[in-house]
Length: 417
Ligand SMILES: Cc1cc2nc3c(=O)[nH]c(=O)nc-3n(C[C@H](O)[C@H](O)[C@H](O)COP(=O)(O)OP(=O)(O)OC[C@H]3O[C@@H](n4cnc5c(N)ncnc54)[C@H](O)[C@@H]3O)c2cc1C
Image 1 (cartoon, rainbow, N blue to C red):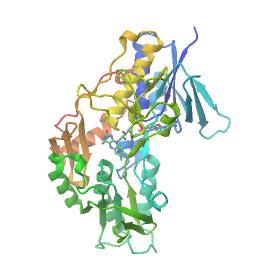
Image 2: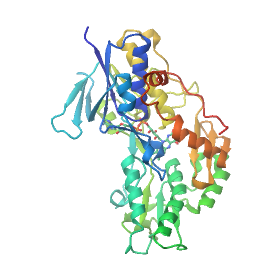
Image 3: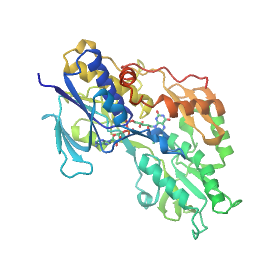
């Protein structure tokens, strides 16, 4: 019998866990020979993207082979450029070698191409700002900050950073930057020279999205880190020496970081189905794309109903991993004609655990982030555990990887560190 082909596009949280979910299902049904699972990702790493704001980046790249090879999933080093749902083909741009495959067919496709930073149309921002949206972006910022120690750098704004956007990512990187700049300043012999980090947002209340329960800890953390929060502030231009605010004021800053929100991968547009305002593909309870036979989607590129109250999934690794597991599992069920065993996606109980630099972290529960579960050093210990253990797939151990791929939802992180 010819083997069916399941193709996963993307090697992030949704894609890796989708491949694990598919391998889990094939193993559970004793059908490992019935299908071949291939994961398409441009490079050979699974990036732990949520850690890109951290100073230490060594552990954020996990070799894909250490997760995929033990469970028999192939990695194809390529970028998917378009999907032809009618012909069940994915067009590819191979990474590195020009003579790689330029298309691959599938019986079931799981779209997990994620999202990326959406820059507003501000003059000079694309050329002169950094980001922590990807591993490459985080590495560029780290090199830039380290290079500030080199002699001969203009003093104006040398130890000043401007972070544009006070959403969750903006808050995390803003709280990290003062210590990173101080360390480089001291290395450069500038001990005592003032370090400034400004966190700008057009919303009046900086960090308002974290909800009222987190407002007091948030203010304490920003104050402890010495971050100047400027609400109701827009940026009209950026250049190598700083930014110009909407008011016309110029801020000299060698380091400008954009944290202006995420938008789903443009690959979603090639499906030809209506997308939500974030560019995401709506999926049903089995994570199938309506009107696109054989296609599932998971993670930041998809929007699913998460609970009985109708909340939609949030672009988060919290949702990407379980969505991936369920999509992978259901793709196998469909391929094997075991529709009755498909699993409905459900993710009740949304939580947020936000790192706030040396002061600690804040842990809230609820879609409106109404309940404060923990803050300060206790929340920081929980965040460390999440960032270094909870969100990593097991490596090398076939049984452990297959077990972790079960289409289950994970309980919220324990409130005890
Ligand atoms: C600094 C930062 C902090 C964050 N903190 C948190 C947090 O605390 N908690 C939380 O839940 N979420 C957090 N997030 C959000 C979280 O990282 C994303 O929601 C999550 O990464 C989504 O997973 P994904 O697999 O859908 O997409 P991604 O992680 O973006 O992975 C997509 C993958 O697909 C690949 N890809 C893209 N396009 C193609 C293509 N055309 N062909 C082939 N491959 C492709 C990419 O290379 C990548 O490997 C944070 C994000 C950032 C940037």
